[in-house]
Length: 441
Image (tube, rainbow, N blue to C red; front, side, top):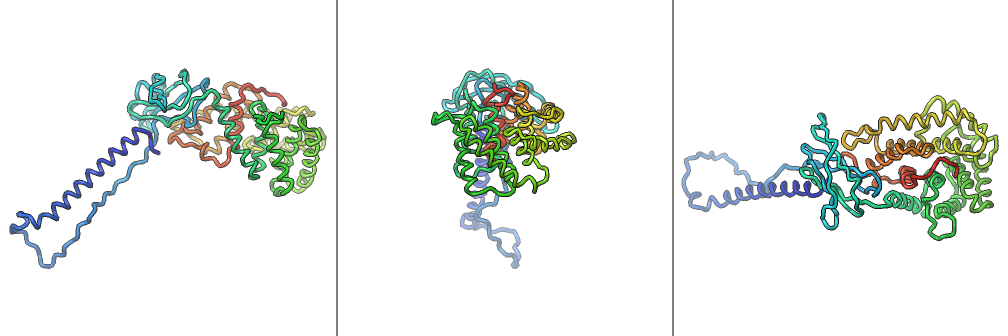
């Protein structure tokens, strides 16, 4: 990736060197072409040239086998930005690090904050130094970038008062555009509804009709699905969505919510006898049990107890995780042993992530299985944070987001490359609605 000025400087120097070599080669060609017609060219020579010699044509343009090395940034930041009241840190790397850094206004070019580089360590394997530029105390908003001696500048980024709220709004709007174009997948619809259930205050009501816009959009999405049908592979999860939507929408329209619940029961009745136990089935059971209170659904949920007891991999499957969370928050009568198992597994996994996340997302020496795996871990931490309202988990969520948005070795913007944004939705909702607590909405 190209850096800003230091990289541009390297490229310009390389181009100048290439031009010098081209100019030297051209001069040689010119001299050789002129020699036969000059006075020196007319002098006799003692060099013996055999009659069998074959003249070789000279290349008109010299071939220069040269390529620029791959350049990686040395000032690593979240390429989208930071909240004014949040922790704001960049990671610096290089053979030599400066003692101070500057935060520069991207429009005026003026320095708006300066600080000392801290936490400098030497990484023997990489043969570079790594340090931290902490600008959390910078009292500034707008588009800025970091400037450092020896190692150059960062990508520009924003510092804003409502940074996470705006970023969440943009992500949500992208999903709602898919909803309007009828391309929204059922899992995406479930995730939107899950985010609304946990953090309803961050969802707007632009037309001021006292019904959040997201619910109106999803209502239209349901109408389209009912008219055009649902694939067989999505029916169980679609039933889960309808039951969840019914539970959520009942305070806006009880009659419509009742129709949704009846439809959810019908759809689920068509698939539960043909499918084995699965994440989608469990999610549907949990949502239907919460919405209806029918013990038939509750008993079927208990059949998953041995599965939850013997492994924790279910936490990595979205439908399992959402279904388990719904079972934890329902007001219906629940099996306390099953609740204890779910909660214990969730907290254990969150603590495992907490103990090693710095290695997973270290900007220079990160060890992970890619952005999809990181988002799974972030989703687990988000769910644990919803239960515990843990300040530490909130910070971990922020660090995950910064890494995925550019604070990594090559400043890759994984968020911008994502085709589907649902993996980020709960994480952003958590950061945008930090004051929400663990309670049934």
